[in-house]
Structure formats: structure tokens, C-alpha cells
Image (cartoon, rainbow, N blue to C red; front, side, top):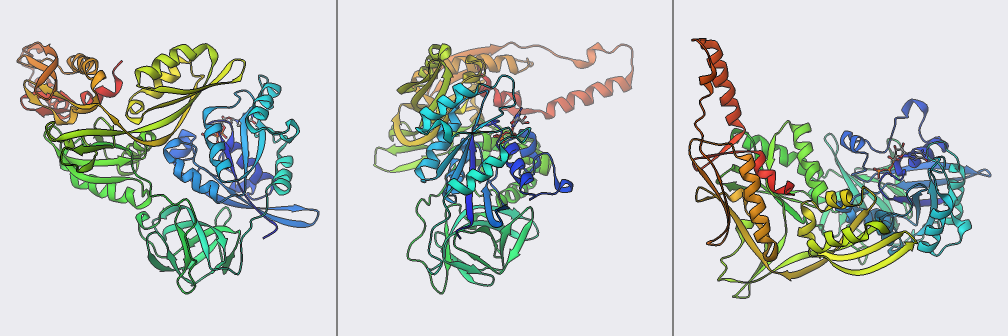
Length: 595
Ligand code: GTP
């Protein structure tokens, strides 16, 4: 145990986490040249393309110093706020963290939010200034920022380049010297922390664990405390480049367990595994059930694909426990599913996986967050869909989820950023200068307001310089109303949104304008209206046109005529019939892109 070091790397996106991890594997000869790929840790295609580590993994390295062998377990953490609970559990499995800061960028929002998680878990922080090879690196300034942030000594900061490999040996030395060896009692009952799991189509679920106390042996009967289920540890082992089976894992070890579990829902990140014969008294602190916060309808473009979509969703769910779905139907879109996601990135990933892995083309409706409705009678229930909105007479009040957002920006953008946050109902709770021209702003605001276009706006206002991260801080009452869109008097359920009363008027107007642009003229006038309850708040009209596509054809060229008719039919497939109005699919997403 005294020669084990468990650590993670925390960094803002693109500050060089994966590159540096690769270097560590290189220097410790964990990967041979033949095995070397651009980024070994990111093994999902999607991840590689996006350059984001979506799923955490762990990898073990051997490090020799003065003839003494050390085992270093690097636990990878996902970089995005949608997965912050997973990050927190990976961090809980470590004793130390490399805090990577890009020498050209300085401290960014995610540097800070991840650092807080690491400090909460009492990790030893090793600050590393990365990308020092770049000509525009600003090492002295960035070191000052790190000293301010951590209160450390400037000499504690290591300098490195993941690109050239400079400084990497010093990082390994610092891990051995500074990260404490795991503590825990080898003779106590087994207590293993589940920090991640992965679905494998041949082997079922592979659960990643860190042994906090006790030992686990191959063949042991084990119990997952929070799901209260028992299994046999069919295979246990450590995570090298491939899984290497072992007979026993002991206190301080990081490894995996395969126990015949078939679906990801049975394995909850943060759960504790113990022995059935000799169970531990309590689970490891910090277990939370992750709940989806963003909901949207997902519909097949072709209604006949409904069953295929269901099969695809069930498969996705096998390895993505945080995805939820239940059948729903929409007058406009037919049969589909109401899906729950951890956040917007998660939603995008699911959509992309449906497309790539299952060849399913889907329409996603306007996402909304999870609200809590309180009725006059004193009942309360969660609303995942605008159609869940109770009758206004029966409703007492609605609560919506709030976040605390950290924004780090150059001081010249403070003004416009404040205007943006205010327009999103944000309230500033703190403003702090990190250096003379960099400021950290802290805001409390409704999660629902950042679901649409907040991030894009933040980036464009600050010319890409501002960074942003957030965490949830609970529910607060809000004056929310349901805004409906009517086409020729008929409500289009898939276009309804829940929105704050103060923004409803302007939003309704822009919706109608946008739909007017997107809905093609048809053979009659189309009235587009925005309504709250019975009250119409905005209106536009698409004027009628008589459109005869064959009129253009000369002579009696029948094949040409047929071709055109075919073409028109195809075009129609991408339309949805709402009452007597044809609505193009992109109209359902229009709300996301309102200026
Ligand atoms: P995410 O996983 O997306 O959060 O990114 P990351 O932090 O893992 O960053 P990654 O390792 O993918 O590096 C981001 C970019 O910076 C890549 O284009 C790297 O090639 C480059 N990069 C990383 N380290 C260095 C370095 O030390 N010097 C230089 N010049 N470029 C680097």
C-alpha cells in the first residue's frame, strides 16, 4: 500500500490533459510504440473527434525509483459539467490531483470548479504549468494566478510541455513525493467505491472500483449497498492498457470487477461494494442518485421507425445509466419518447450516438428543465414536459432549478456579460479580480435560462475569451407560464415551452416571426399565434400561394414531370402535417436559435 499513488488530472478543456496523460504512459513504458495512438485514453470515436473525455477510465503505471517500484493509478475524469457527479466520484477515489493550467490561457472556469471538488475531497494538489513550449506562453503571470488561487509557494509549481515532454519526469517524481499513499485498513470488512462503469457487449457491465478498506478475492459474494443487490465477483483485476485479471485486490488498489451484471442501471456511480459474509457497517460518504435535469421529446423522423428507435434507446441505456426515457405521443410528431439528460452536451451526445451507432434520424423537441409544480391542494410533482402543466386554477406555484455560475473573463467584457446574465435573470453574488485584467464573476441563475443559447452568446460576446462553469444549487419559486403556438387555431404541442412570464411576450413574438420564415407558403393563409392560456400574445401570417411545380415543365415531357413530382413527395417527407398545415422539421428546433 505504501507504494501506491492514486491521482487524477484536472484541467480546463483543452489545457492539455489527454496529451500529458499520454506522456506519463510513455515515460513509464506503460504503452509500447505499437500500441501508441494519438490519444489512448479516449477510446470512443466520438470522444476522440470532440476531444472531450466523456467517460472516466483508469490506467495503472509502474514507476521505478532507486530500485523501488511504485504503482501509479491515473484516474481519468470527464471534463464537462454535465458529468460533474462522475468527476466528483473519480476525485474521491484519489489522494492527489495534477492541476494543469495552460501557460497561454491561465486559470479558467473549469480549472476552478474542478479544483473545488478536489479540495473538498482533501486531495493533495500538484500545480502544473503546461504548454511552456509555446512562444506566447506567459509563465510568470500564470504562476502568479496559481499562487493566488492555491495559496501555494511559487516553487511548488511544476512547468511542463505535454508536446515536447519537457518536465514530465519531474511530474512523476512529484506524484511519488507529494501524493500521500492510500490509507485504510486491510483487515477491515471490504469497502470499495464504485467510481465508474462501462458496458461491454461480451462481458456485460465492468465496474470500476477503488478499494478503501479490506480486500476482495475472485469468486467472493459481494453486495452493492445502495442497490441492495448481490453478485459473485467472477473476475477482478487491474487496469493496464487492457484489463489484467488478479486473484485479489487490496486496500488502496484501483481496479475492476465483472459480476454478470447486464445493465448499467444496476451499477450506480458512488455506490459501495462490500462482502455478503462480512459486510461493512456503512457505505462510503457522498453517494447521490444522479437525476436528469434536461428533458426533450425524441421522435423518429419516419413514424414507422418507432420500434427501431425504442430498441436503440434500450441499447443506449445499457451503457448510459443517466439516460432516461418513457413513451410519449405528440399530435404533431406522432409516437416518440420523453428523454431525460444530465445536460445539453449529454443530449447532443445521445442524439449523435443514435445517428451514428443506430442509423436513427430523430427530431428532438425544445428541451426544458425539470420543474416542480405545487397545486392548490398541496400536492407537488415534477414536470418534465410543458404538457404536464396543471390547470392554472389548480396551480399554486412552480419551482425551477437554479445554478451557481462561475464566469472568468477579461475585464473589458464585464459590461456586456453582465447585461447577458441579467437578461437571463441572473443575480450577481460576487465579483473578484484574479489579476488586473481578469475577473471572476459569480452568478445565481435559473438553469432553464442557460439551456437555450447562453453558452454561445457568452462566447460571442467575449470573443471566445470568457469561460463558464456551473453547479446546481436547488429549486426556487419562479413565475413560469406555458406558451403555446397555434397554427390556424390549432395548438402544436411539440412547440410549447415553459417560460418566465416576463420573457414570454418577447419570446412569443420572436417564435412567430421565426416560424413565418420557416413555414413555406401553402395554398391558404396560415395564422401563426403565440398564446398563454386563452390569451393570444403574438401573431404572424404566412400568405397563401398557389404552387404548381409542374407548371414549369414545357411540352409533354412526362418523365421530367414524374421526376419533379417524386422530388416534391420527398420534400414532403421532411414535413410534418399539423392539422392542415405542413411544418418543416427544422421549425421544431427553431426556438433554439432565436436571436
Ligand atoms: P479535453 O480532454 O478536451 O478537455 O482536452 P485536454 O485537456 O485533454 O487537451 P488535449 O490534451 O486534447 O490538448 C488540447 C490541445 O493542446 C491539442 O491540440 C494538443 O495537441 C495541444 N497541447 C497539449 N499539450 C500541449 C503542450 O504542452 N504544448 C503545445 N504546444 N500544445 C499542447
